[in-house]
Length: 395
Image 1 (cartoon, rainbow, N blue to C red):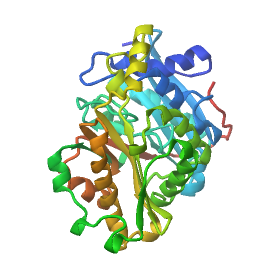
Image 2: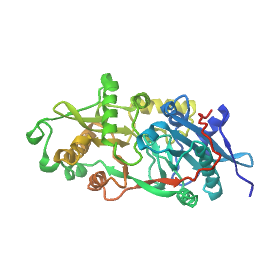
Image 3: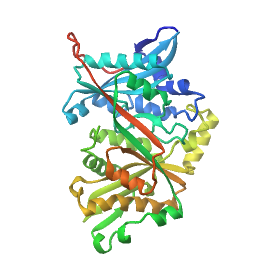
Image 4: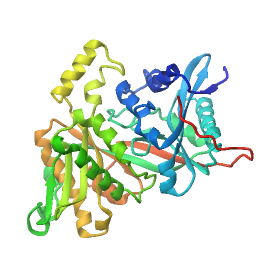
């Protein structure tokens, strides 16, 4: 077998190859649906991804016989280092033909680059942030694809662990069928309703396109507050939220956002994103002109049948209280109620950290078992004596 040659990405052509590589690697594998190039560019291109404003990133491609066989990103996220109070580097965008030699070569290249930044541990995968695509898929490869959820062949998990990485957390996703039976079965305790009785001080807001920027900032602050103590959390920056809003605004309707206020103060939120794969899965990663016309038509008339609950959280000051325990259920009930004005047949609740028993209990009261699992790993790094810090961004 020919040797694997892992080289850093420097040119525009190499960057284009890096972004589009998964669909070349995984074509024909059971369950794989190519991601939309436009979505991947927003995640990975240095000029479009907001992560590059606070992180140093180096991309690598593995080559064999002059053909690309894998990719990886080495990431020094300075906001993460501030949050974790430790020099933890990250790897991400790890995609490869399912061969141990390729995966090991890619991880070694990322490790060597990160060691020069004096890191103590390596964590991943993230693309390129824990606020975006996270984890290696270990179960659910043949389930329907979902927006912002990475796909990998099942062998990848074994090869990462063989390279010296150990599991730190699994991320669970649950498929919730939206039916009359689900709505009848899942109710807030005592059938409490906002604005009545014990919930008299509670009000519920929807998304306003006119106020989307200010609502986005409220959502960011709530998200950062609600998830600040969770594993792998990195605060979302204001410019990251602005970039996210710009990207998803064409997909959004008022019913997609639930903001719960107590005495006029935001205390909980939930947000649903329509599943872009519903309208692109038959178009390929790079549609033809006819494909773009189909995409525009489907988007205009909201031809989606599934969605993902991407944000669900409660402010820390209510954590451990009866009200804090009640609010996630209230948000889910509100989303179930709104299904009557949206075309979705099912939603994905995820991902949810394996260690987050509160959210898992809520999800499993609706769906007993997850239908997808992703995994985060870590590896302790031994520093070389002659390493030096020289961070840089990829081309």
